[in-house]
Length: 210
Image (cartoon, rainbow, N blue to C red):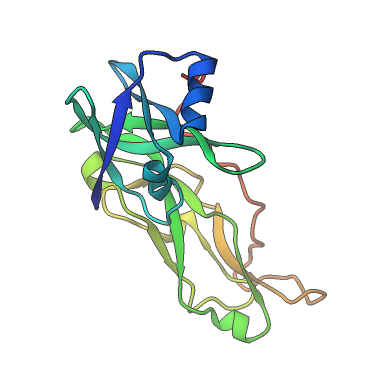
């Protein structure tokens, strides 16, 4: 997996007023945390954090702090302004060698389904999936080849396998499928109708913003 550097400054002020001042100055407040480690409040340039948020790949983020400390992290949570969709806060989890991590990985669709050529519509029910693995085994993304899907067929969690990676959603979870044209017979070819999308739980409980 590709590793990219992110420069960050340690924050000593964590008040609401200081966070607002950061945002007005083009900075985004965030926090770095890990088990058995005191969390570190940080700030980064908005233009520097955006490439890690708005991407179809997972990256290991080499965070370089202004106090000379460095941490390899993954992005675990992001908060957005409800009006502008700008990033207003982020959480980074520091990686610990030999310790597994739970996180979400992007899902990428490959190929053109034969069912679409026959009049069906391709529906992607999940754009990210929850996994557990060691830091060295974190996949950049999960590729689903849909070329062979006919109308009514779908790809489930149980249908995919990545070495050393455990998928945390139920095996019957439908990731992508080809649905019949509107008004057509809805019986699916493989005996199962695509399930409604489920909400993927975040890797940690929501903590107060710092």
